[in-house]
Length: 194
Ligand code: ITT
Image (cartoon, rainbow, N blue to C red):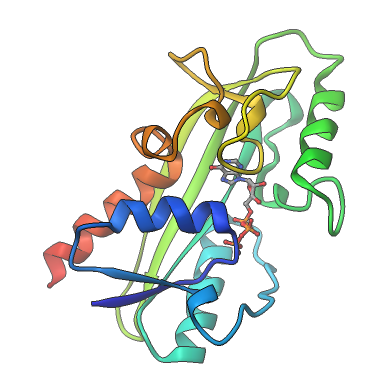
């Protein structure tokens, strides 16, 4: 069964394709299709934004779609950057810009800088619609480490580990991540529906 993953983020695409690998679901990325549209994320919650992405891509291609809206919540920063994680340091900012901003903002707070990643995974096929959330608790460090993954991975150490997410392989990250928890839930639900 073909399902389109409504994401332009290559890091997410790699992770989500691996979660569905070997199942009856064939995950098609927007890069395999005619183009990657700009979808304005106007919602106030991960769920609203995720649904917006899945519905937009369903309308465009008339095929079942899944989407992820995710972000980092840092407790000492009042749960920021939250839904604004992608563009925290401004429009067109890089992952490094975001990481540097977070590190600077945390300088005045004592360690540990506790945080969590959140992912909301959504499925939409024109009639059925459901979502699953996943969380990953950990802490933010002062100097980025590792080159795998994307986004805030180089500054985030999950609870119970001493390496950052960017020092893990994608397979290792998929054993514990917020996104893996959310999409594994979604996958199990889809398998039950078929
Ligand atoms: P799409 O909307 O096209 O899927 P995006 O990168 O814009 O891609 P979001 O709007 O969901 O995705 O923003 C999520 C941001 O949160 C992402 O760009 C990262 O900065 C951060 N983020 C989310 N999950 C992450 C993870 O697993 N590791 C590191 N950073 C993550």
